[in-house]
Image (tube, rainbow, N blue to C red; front, side):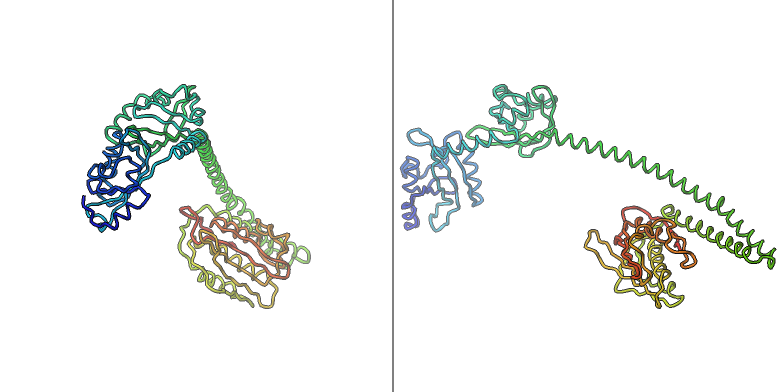
Length: 509
């Protein structure tokens, strides 16, 4: 061998680090004194020799040579642990690494190998660490050889399978599998060793295991492959999935029970809807007809008796006519309310500002009243009639229950921080206000806080507001005090809740 750069070679020779320079074929072209000391061979004996054949024991030489050639071809780096032989036949465990070599050091050199001997103490400490991990691991660990024979079993695997290690070490691992996997395992292992095609090794999957008592367990199995010397070992890491599977089974039972209850509830709601439809029809025809009959008879009495009615009789007849009209109006409002949720209307993009301004113009057309829209209002995807139901009732109520010189309602909206996007509408008025004790009551059907002679209405409007808001997947709440006006907060989603259609409703006034 001819050294191309003597200063670099001298520098290598002065190092205490083991250095071996090899060419592209894996032959040694330079060995420093530290390499001679570690290997027991002098430099002349090493130079020109195949690195793997000269230094690595025969059982490992072929596999290490393959790793070395692959690294040299890619100018890559590797780090390996091998058993090296000495001239006297003794062996030692050595950790060695290959790095690409700069061309200005050795023209013939392709890579440089550094190495150090693993001391017996280091080996012993490593073995102790590995044994501690093996013994204390919560997963079951079983190691087998290439013939499927069990060589090691940790305590967690003993507990999992119900066997003591002494009972299964030396036996085929197939004994821990139920049929038909037990009968197929040896063929699978042989096929893998011949073809390299893995179904579990290096992949991991759920499988079934068989305990000593015959019980079949669901497990997660991950298998790793290790080649030591000329031997191939497989290590299986096994986790008992029984508890998880039981939870999944219970969850599936609960899901099925929930589906059953939903189906029952849906059927009950369908029946209730049919009954409500029948009830609405009954009110519309059987109850409303007599009420209107009363109205007509009162009108006939007024026409027939005319001036003959005096004093209290005349007042009573007028009161009867008024009550009949009020009852007819309440029946109509009840019919309107009952229709919410029973007919369908598709959601559509709605410019809420335009819609509310239209409502405001009509509501403020009579008397000293103004409706102000503050700032930008969003576009929502919803059934038009539902949104109109909400804002028309709130705006009209704000103007109706109001004794201010100039009755005023303002509407604004802001985007909340919730996900998915939701908008909070603020509908405020300078009206008479509502006592805190009545804040929930006013959303119930036919709940009125004032006499008819003071404020008109039937007590259905706010009930319809709440129902429409809920159908849109929103919320409504109130902030108010007597004499300080009212603010209704309506929170609505930017897009509709997940359903195909919405109920069509009429405005309840």
